[in-house]
Image 1: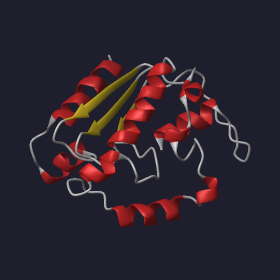
Image 2: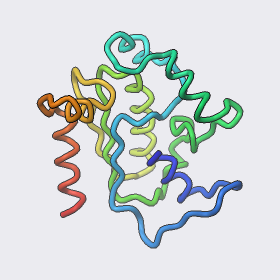
Image 3: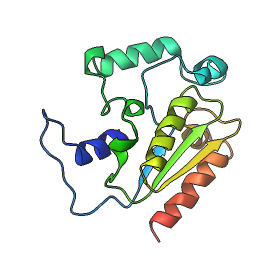
Image 4: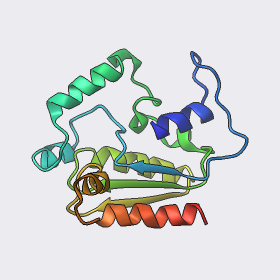
Length: 160
């Protein structure tokens, strides 16, 4: 949703009211962002049995969210391309992913596009972690892992 909001501010959608900001966002925290509706990347194959995301549920969520003919850069940021992100209204971005999550490869594409566009992106891919692992750890009382520590450290820098 954060990527969609940044996109709507930067590229007004013809069917929606224009959103604007008096200044760029200080930061955008993207924890395991859902950047594509595709389930064909290698990370889907290699991590399907490790992650909490179920392919059949993914199809249901996608269809409940948006019709296939409406898929675009706003709803599926992986399709945006590098030029889309040039001049994005955000100073700093943290993108986390788990090495064992199904979205890993699509997240990496968006990370690369944003970096190439000159967006101040920090990317953290966490070994042996799954989709939104830092949130799951907090919910279940497990010890905080690499993803949680990366988020905390990044947040301190944003609010200094």
